[in-house]
Each structure stands twice: as C-alpha cells, then as structure tokens.
Length: 253
Ligand SMILES: [Zn+2]
Image 1 (spheres, rainbow, N blue to C red):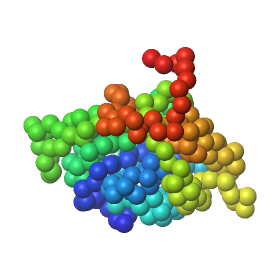
Image 2 (image 1 turned 120 degrees about the horizontal axis):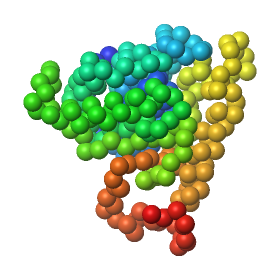
Image 3 (image 1 turned 180 degrees about the vertical axis):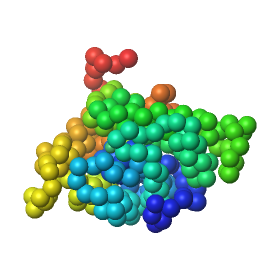
C-alpha cells in the first residue's frame, strides 16, 4: 500500500473523506466487503487532519496508513486542502479532478452533503463537482478525461433517508480494527490529551449502535447506509429482498 503518495493504480471505488478516519467511520466496512468481492478501492483524504485536538499530522499519517492497510486499500493519498477551513477553490478542484482521472473509479463515495462539520459538507460538494468536471474533455490536465458512474454518500453525524444499505456483517470487525488504528483520536483511558467528542467511549459505542440499527432494518447484524441522488438498479430484486418480510412503512415515498 502506497502512503500519502500520488495514486497511480486504477480502482473500482474511490472513497473521499475530509479528514483521515472519516472513511473508516462512514463506509469502512463497505469497502472491506467490496474488496472481499474482488473490487479494488483507494482512499483520498482531502486534508491531513492537522487541526485535530489530539495527535499530530505525523501521528495521524502513520495511523491512516495502518488503517488503510487493515481495510485493504490499494492506496491512500492525502491532499493538503486545510483541515478546519477546507479549500474548494479552482486549484483544490483541479487537484481532486487529477486524482479521479488518474485512478479512474467507477464509483466515488463521499460524505453526505449535510453534516455537523463544515469540512465534510465542503468535501461532499468538492468530490461531487470534481467527479463531473473530471469527465470534461475540454478540461486539459496531465491525465485523460474520466467521469465516474455516480457519487454516493455515507452517513456521518446526521440521519437521512438511506437510498440503499450494504450488509457488512462479515466486515464489521475489520472496520473497528481500522478505526482503532487511530489511537490518538478515539477512546484511550491512558491518554492525557484533552477529551473530544470523538475520544469519549460513547462515540465508538454509537458507531457500533448505528451499524446494528441499520442492520436491524434489513435483518442482518450490521449494515452501512448510503444516500444516492438516484436509486441503484437491482439486477435481481428477488435476491435483493432475501431475508425480508412484508410490512408497511409510513415513510415510503
Ligand atoms: Zn471528519
């Protein structure tokens, strides 16, 4: 696995996060699950996480590399767009376009467009717009034009009506192992650093509870939820509803 270097390998999926650890928390188990099916994925962190209350950019880079290895990423590249004020100007956009064109993902996974942290909101928009612009042939850069099939969004602090779930029961323990690689950020009773929202024990408990809750909705142990501007196409609706049972849902649209 290449660390914080230019990503040169093509992948099926590019997972984009604002900060190192966003991917692990939001969609880490889905990536593990896809890798088990032979899909190749890479991670793009838009910032180095230098504004975090705990740890240092050096510590976080080492943690991020270990976590990417645990997940099975083909690469993890880090841009430096500014943690706590993520830049979305044309230069930033061109940097993301360049990565998309080099690694040619079929699917981009990005943070949901509404969230507690403004960097996540900006990352969502940047990833979406860069994914579209990357396909414009008239926009010349070092790599050939490429437009991903779609951008789908992973949940963070807010809830939204999911467009689809991924059963991650078999991948959940690996996700938690990857999250624990970020030892400086999460619960550690021996740490002398200041407490943050993330470092409380209840934070990781909530990550597990959310996956269990989503899993319960589709009759599996753990699931991750995604929002898509358009619903996915199911090749086999019979297989897609295996394990379900009939029922009414007032939220059906
Ligand atoms: Zn974040």
